[in-house]
Image 1 (cartoon, rainbow, N blue to C red):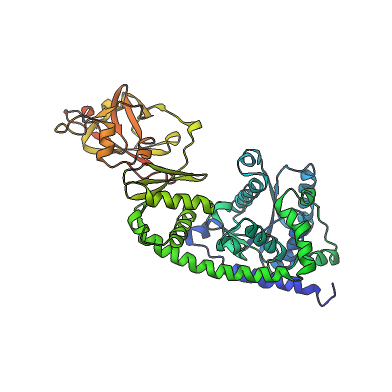
Image 2 (spheres, rainbow, N blue to C red):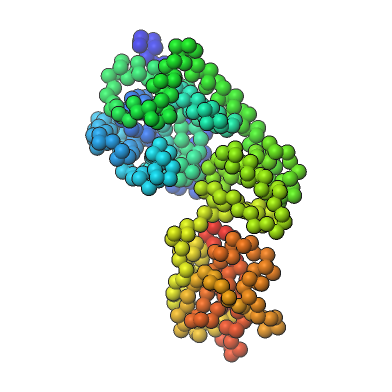
Length: 475
């Protein structure tokens, strides 16, 4: 690289970084948790991140910013310890704050595959380090060739416009980094890998080689080592053209997102979608709305065939059908004329009952049942003196339980109460009951049993149950 060419990469990085920083906006609450003058580089020790670190070391010094480097030890390579040592030593030579995390992807890899498990675990660890060091902006070394690889992979997977949009130069990724305030930036996204290689050679930058990058069993490696070299020979400059195509797709996706947000607002009724309103749209518009809804709930984008099945079942199911279409991140259910997304049940970790004592607490959290029991003052309710002497049990419905809501109302089965209160069938399986011995005191979603109410003067309380935010609504 000539002297005239050498500064171009530095200048391109600086221009992109300044633009990225303008998009970092911290709310008053977030500003208390982060320092806007801090920025971090995700540093694997490979060529790309090593070049980015060197470029940002100069850039941060010029702009008066404190630079951090974060490294993730996957434990997948026998050389991982050596890479960690290399990164720590190089960061020390530059005078940059260094931190690292060890991760274990074995359990997630069994469910999602090694590549996806490593990606999600890596970003979660990077997000955790950002939070620990109050860094609001994480920079990664993705470049133009990475963008081309991503778009080609999405094309080969049959992805829609969203997949073909590729990577943004900056975006929030709470599903990956774990905090909605964190920003991820890619200042090298418009730079070719060949320019990075030339820069590294000219500046004598030392870096490590990950031997897994040569394993073409992984789709991205196969593209990088076998397909893209052929494209370069026959279609020189295809990376730049794919990058332009990604910008066009991003513009189209923005319009689709705006339409989906309008349609979603029109169809939302509480926590669910009104099927009657949904059915007024054509197929493409329904799918666009559903993708927007799933994304707002943190669910991974479904396949076209899965989406076809959901749409067909939602619109054709009978009014009283108990529809449930399963997704790895939640279940899509229909109750009468509404569609809901419900949390995934972990039947293997089911807790049927738990004994406890009430010692006057107004709030009692039960993680195993996914919610909180509130004990609130009431004119008509359970005497606190009597309640404090009881050994209480919180449990899931076993079958056959009955409850009487008031003296002038009949004793009815829980099933009858649930039907009268229009509680969906799947919620009935999760709503807890509270007993004193064998006496049913409270059924979430229904109310208190009046048999527990005393007639003598005294301070009285009632129970109220509320699921955690990721679960169901209060009951």
